[in-house]
Length: 173
Figure 1 (spheres, one colour):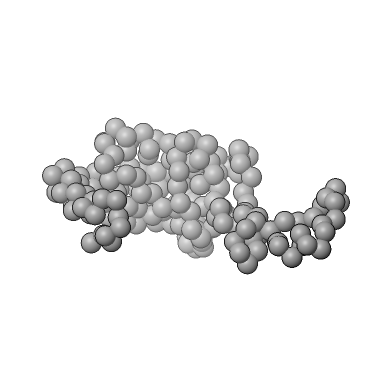
Figure 2: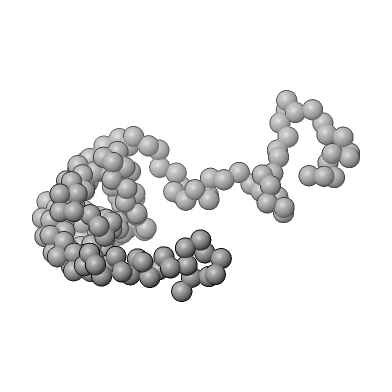
């Protein structure tokens, strides 16, 4: 259920009705077979993919240094993620796992397009190609926020060009 303050308290029921009406579970199962086959083909062409797991539309690529040792390669997973972004494909990479989870309502043509963008992201990552975006130590937006004080406001840092604050102003920070 939804809290009474929710603008549309019937939204969960409507989502369930749409899911049943459009057979989204069946769609995910059918298209999952297609995705599994395509990802297996991509895996066969790229040694950095140690395993493909998942069910339906939710899949995970296990990125490894080589298939023999299955040693995890988190850096390669990040490189694939960043090259995928350049291809217009947004992926989630956690440790050495790259998640592949397209929208439940994606059509076969859309899934084919999405999968078609994945391989052009993996190839330059394996080759050590340059990234269009610099990799930060953390991809979390929270990690890049300016520091905040105890009240939740962005903490001010005085610079060499800032005039000194009066004592009354300093107390209000």
